[in-house]
Amino acid sequence: MEPSTQDKDAIRSVSKERLQQLVMEAQRRAPLDVARILLLESDETVGAVLQHMHQAPAYRILLRFPPTRRENIVKFSGDHVGDPWDDAQKYPDGSVGRLMEPPVAVFAPDTPVDRAIEMIREWTHDTLITYGYIVDADNQLIGIVAMRDLLLAAPQDKLQDVMLLQPFSLRPDEEVGEAMKEVVYRHYPLYPVCDDAGRLLGVVQGFMLFEHQNFELSAQYGSMVGVDKEEHAATGWISALRMRHPWLQINLVTAFMAAFVVSLFEDTIAQVVVLAAFLPVLAGQSGNTGCQSLAVTIRAITLHEFKPGVVRHVLVKETLLGLANGAIVGVVAGIAMYFYANFSGADQPHVLGVVVFLAMTGACLASGVTGVMVPLTLKKFGADPAMASSIFLTTATDVVSMGLFLWLANVLVLP
Image (tube, rainbow, N blue to C red; front, side, top):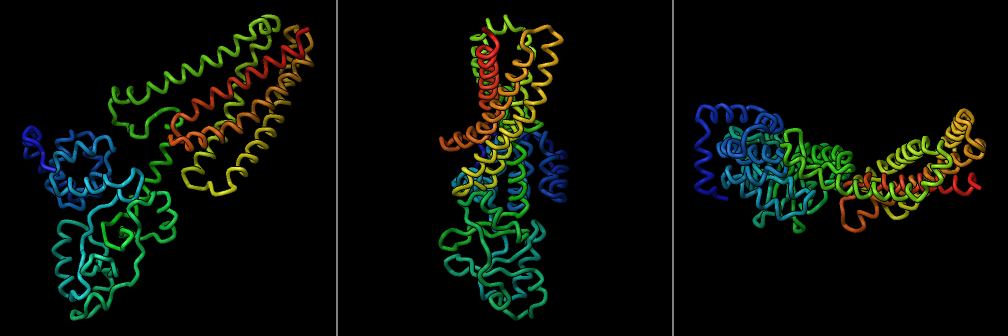
């Protein structure tokens, strides 16, 4: 991917002294540390630094940047970074292929041990080498050799004599979550990536898989309230506004739905004023119950725990939890309403206490069910199950809790 003339001019605008300093820092630090140092630099500067580095470490640094910046950085980093980047874009987002980097230390099976060691010594000036990959004439991975085995082998031995046969590998189109299940007990620093025919396509760092999965899990909370997972601490306020604001508009529309339900019972509130004091109590408690259910469900989706029969189990469990929690909290809230109504001089305080108890129980039950159904429904229709789930959950819990509370008061309290 050759940068344009304008891009080349931008690269030249970086002072030689500054560029040399950054390149030296990048060459002696871990990729994640380098990305943190370069995070506040311009895309042109980052690309210029990567252009002066070996392909493998340069590409690892690129992958540490937010996805929204990577494509622009590639324009200034040269073909040795742009080519593997283009190859990675052929695979789905969230797949192993997106984290794949070009393999280093690829050998033919008849390569002598002493020759392989000489080649590795040359390569280690530019990048860290953990394993040697042995491929046949069709580039099919047939073995892996570790550095320890090379050091213990006789110089005249062939790599095919000391390699580990049938090595474990990942597929490029495999989801990172699924790959994590396969590697969680292996703890290898590096994993080869092969196609269905066994041809070596690249390698993926073990910690890259864990970093990606950790990022996905940490992004869930923000996604549930409309914060895009691509937003970072260094993201500009205009970009952050563009990513967040549409969900706030959606939240405003859904809030009007809850306000409409309350407006249907204006006469009820006017006649029994004490009801107004308990509306936020009902909404808040049922909302928290739903958020607990939502958090468990999204975590299960992310970890791919929803196997056949699990959905029904989770739905039954959250229904029972909502019912039990609502009843227990409802007893306390009902007693509080009884004393508050007595203190305020309201009529039928005991009936108002019963209304609060029933409304709290019903609202928490509905919240538990909604916390499961909202993300599962979003996933079924191809949407991100975490994205703004809490916005729809809050609307549902507000409508049910306030509507049920005011309806019960209208039926049981008013003549």
